[in-house]
Image 1: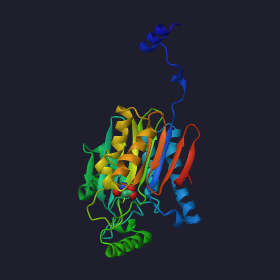
Image 2 (image 1 turned 45 degrees about the vertical axis):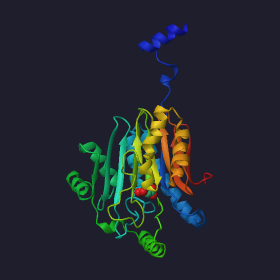
Image 3 (image 1 turned 90 degrees about the horizontal axis):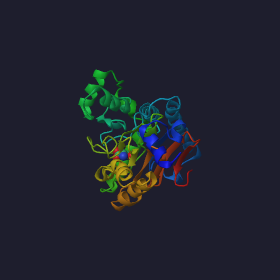
Length: 331
Ligand code: ASP
């Protein structure tokens, strides 16, 4: 068949392109935070435990994609799994603010639409990612904060818990240590610790991103980071990519990191890896921002990059990839 005739038939939809019958790629990536633990202080037992926590979240999300579920359900399940795991800085085991309380932030974004929901500064919601999703699906709003968000949680029947549920012995020790250091070094900036996130591509070609965190240890009451800010720590658009970030949120907000990565893919036609590299190793680094992102594009390419000591992460796809890593050289 001549090339013009083939093109005409393709345009009219009378014949399908050769790849139409191939199954669409599935992909998921997760993170458990940047700069969590100095590699020199990481014991083999700790490393094994973090790896197991990451693997449980990764596989929970991928199982949903594999049985034809949505990317939205996959990222919700992956993030919820890490919120329930006290090793990570989200849900139970979240870091504590200066007053000794967990104030939790989360966002979810559906690249189909796109639609988004987020909550910030909640103190009694067991799984903030589920409340963020309720904001997206059951309210006309995008972001609810503090008491207003908790009233909405009550109305929607979300699971609420006493504040003590979030405060683990390890986080109380960390806060005491941070306060002691701040007393010695007045200008000490708190470092990023273990936020969680997930991005996924489903069989229908839809992208989704989700991020959940307790923010920074010893933060001021009322401080909100990048995770619940659409475009900063969380973003998804079916036409480009889905991104979840971790690191010093103030820098991610100022650079609108997650959106900027998708914009570079969409408007400057950079590959996902190039766009991520540009943000993490050029723009963010230039201003002194530390952290990393996980991202997936509409073709199922995954990028996970960071300029911090490490980023706890995992990736799985329908081409057979399944890996978990913590530091630079895929360990
Ligand atoms: N980005 C989070 C925040 O600033 C912290 C982190 O990723 O560990 O709230």
